[in-house]
Amino acid sequence: MRKILFVLLLLPAIGFSQPKIDSLKNVWQDNTRKSTTRLKALDEFIWKGYLFSQPDSAFYFAQLQYNMAKESADKKEMANALNIQGISIAVRGDHQKAISYYERSYALHDMIGSEEGKAGALNNIAGAFSKQGDLSNAINYQQKAYKLYNDVGDLMGSAKCLSNIGLLYKTQNDIEKAIEYFQRSLKRFKAAGDKKEQGGVYHNLGNIYKDQGQLEEALNNYSISLKLNQELGNELTISTNIASIGLVHFKKEEYRIALSKYFQALKIANKVGLKGSIASSQNYIGQAYMKLQMYDSSLYFCSNALSIAQKINDSRLISESSKVLYESYKLIGNTASALQMFELHSVTKDSLLSDENHDAIIRHEFQAEFDKNKADLELKIEQDKVKNEKEKGDLELKSERERSIYIMVFIVLILGLLIYMRARYIRNSTEKTSLLRQIELLKEKGAMRTLITEQDKEELVLDKEKIEAVLESNLNPTDWKILNAIFNNPVITKKAIAEEVSLSVEGVTSALRRMYVKFDLKKSNNQKLALLMEATKISSEPSKAQ
Image 1 (cartoon, rainbow, N blue to C red):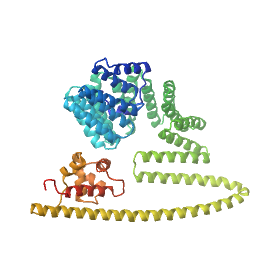
Image 2: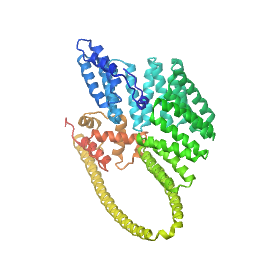
Image 3: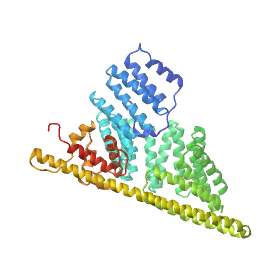
Image 4: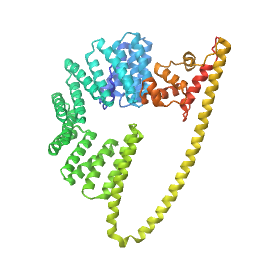
């Protein structure tokens, strides 16, 4: 089984020659060959030809692989096919659904006693949880995968798990643990003699030290990573190393040294032809020129970076390059262009914050900064217009009329919004009250049935066996804890649930979403109460033996 660590899903798909793909296709379609040979060719055909470039087609071919393996009772290849289907679904963004395929792959590997196969499945499950923001579960599954790889003596597999755990702790901002796991993984990569992976770990350590302000330590780790990648001739990562070294010099206010590094990185990026790296390098160059007060050069390179970023639809690069352009235009007194770039930066930045699920406080602070800067720029524009008072008469009158219309439209929209929100609040409150009352009635009904059938009256409790029988699916321990927490307190918040079951709020949200699907609940604002009502209703029903 191919061991796909979740960090690899972030890498660009690698191209393979068409003759090689056609040759593999001919092998797996040749009925005269052994099934093991055909299955191996089909597996490689999917990986090299479709998995990351055409995931829909990869899923289809993996189903053919699964069916062929099932006919020959080859459980290992059945598990491999399920793993491919899970990855193809993850590539398309449905990480929760991907987990079910990884779990089925794990079960088959467990049946045939393949510890390495089980570790690969656990690793992919960890990646899916990471993508959903459930970092606690991601770390837990990575630890399990690490143990299995370690038990079978798979040095590279265990080292990559340690590196992945380091990345997860870095995301949690647990810097001490992140460094610990990166250093542990580094020892194993050195023992395995893998310079490529060593270079990646040194670069990650450089990122941590740079963010922590330990600039000399950051330079040292970036330089080691650069040396390893130069030995391997990996130009793409060499470009990244050099640009990162430039960023450290920029932080040290050594702008000319930083500029030199950025130009080196740009030269390699142009040679490789990767547009994202080209745009990023040009933006760094523009930023350095701005610090050196060479504003024409700054505007030239940042404008190029913005143009490329918009063509490849890279929101983060658009945000970064438009911010530098805003600052440069502001410094040379071009307030109109500065305002235009600031608004572009703000809109893109707000979109990125939304995508990354930042909370409302961050957006509020950002908006306050935006409003302040926008107000300053608009004031400067108005001051410039005062010089042309003779030409403003008719324009001001027209502007006043438009302002009045805008105010009236705004008031109508606000009133409409208030009416809508009030009606929605009443509807949700009524629905919530009704659901709570139905839940209480179901509890009373279950308790009364207990009194009749068992003589001793007891309060109704959720019946896991009944619920799983109706769902035709098992509830994992975390889901069961969450369900009981809601049962005990129907109006409990997600934050309170997270504290009670020792899970992150994102993890609770993911678990609830999973149960909504299992209980086939329609989307509503009271979905949590509807979930509880269904579980209570099932639990209150008499057992078949009764």
